[in-house]
Amino acid sequence: MISDTASFAQRVLFLSEHQNLDALRGIQHGIEREGLRVAADGSLSQLPHPSALGSALTHECITTDFSESLLEFITPPNISVATTLSQLSDIHSHVYLQIDQEQIWPLSMPCFVGDEDDIVLAHYGTSNVGKMKHVYRVGLKNRYGSMMQAISGVHFNFSLPSSFWDIWGEMHGQVADQDVISDSYFALIRNYRRMCWIIPYLYGASPAICRSFLQDRVTTYDFKTLGKGTSYLPYATSLRMSDLGYTNSAQSSLNICYNSLPSYVASVRQAIQTPSAQYANIPAGENGNYQQLNANVLQIENELYSPIRPKQIARSGEKPTDALSSRGVEYIEVRALDLDPYSMIGVNATQVYFLDVFLLYCLYKPSAPLSTAEYKQTEDNLTAVVLRGRDPELTLATAEKPMKLTDLANDMFMEMTQIAHVLDKANGCHEYSNALAHELKKVKDPNLTPSGMMLNTMITENEDNSHFGKRLAEQHKQQLLARDYVHYTQAEFDDMCLRSISQQHAIEQEDTVDFATYLNTYFNY
Image (cartoon, rainbow, N blue to C red; front, top):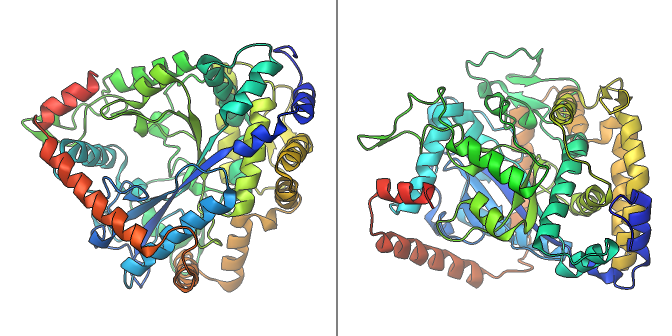
């Protein structure tokens, strides 16, 4: 047993010497990849969600996100990285067999969009739950504009097995019950917030945008121009994570607390229960006119844009905060990943192995509560890397003094090496150390980052964002159509499609109350 105040090195030593080290083989992953359907010319698809893909409301691995053209592919939790990626690849291959001449846009920031009204918000049928999902998106459009609904990314789900938590409890001389597990996940989340600037540096792939994305928006950014219609920032890594995208300035005043599960739930609940003067004039059911679910600061918990979320699977009709409050944290969702434009599925194996190392590092690193000042510091550091991450002179704030990004990253990688060695030992491989070595090269040479590679190609070839995206989309399409299924079969996909349609029909038949009553029941659950 070691104390709660044990150092990082002491914790890693305990982990590496434990007789049940193989508990680390049980780390589970799941991936949610978003991707826009586009026409052959690279413009946004105007076609509805293909019926051959089943019901977007109930399909277990193919749905839509905010817009009708924004596909979302979901893999179930699995301990095998290879299995997760083969599942995701199979889903992509299957979808390409169903969408005819269309392609999946490989970039996080959208293709050319002529007008915001071209972005058709997702529909989920006539059931109350389907209507709620659609009205929520209508509310997002009215609050933030439609363009935000066309942004894509990757969500990475991560959980540790009960056998690991037994070791964790043993290390601290206590039984690792659900309260201990939740507290530990929140410690991980706090350290993630402190260090997640490394994610857009390593994986940011949106340094440029199509100028149509800005429409008439006024911005203070000193954009450079490229080709026919591309705007970029020379050192940017992830404009998706800037206030042009999902780090929306409208939520900057929310004081979400990550110091414990109760404080997190209370602060999120306050945001979803507090009326907003800013949104008060948007109809929220008056005379049956639903232009948003309600006029509160957040309509529902999902509206909170955060680079990481604690998660618990919600039951039917249960709000996410109620699920967390009742049963604790089951897994965490990393939300700071841009699509990898060089991967046919938007993500690659090296990323997954690195994220395992990084997230375990965040758990094992001592994690004090976040003060308001430190929380702002983490936000400022993330914004700095999003906008200027490849600037060799960029410094980030620390508790002691500003430090160069490269120096901070090198220090992190030195400590993460210890975690990688433990994971290699537990799994009888070298994948974790290899992944760390691969990503460290990007710290030493920013030109090796996806954002650096993209801009270097586009500037050298005078190739605008649209042409770059169309070229990669066509490559990915041919790769995916040429491969055979590895995990699923066509018969299984056909069965998922039919089953999802049947499930949606059943949900619609089971409704017994009107939409207003349904919403009232949901919000008062």
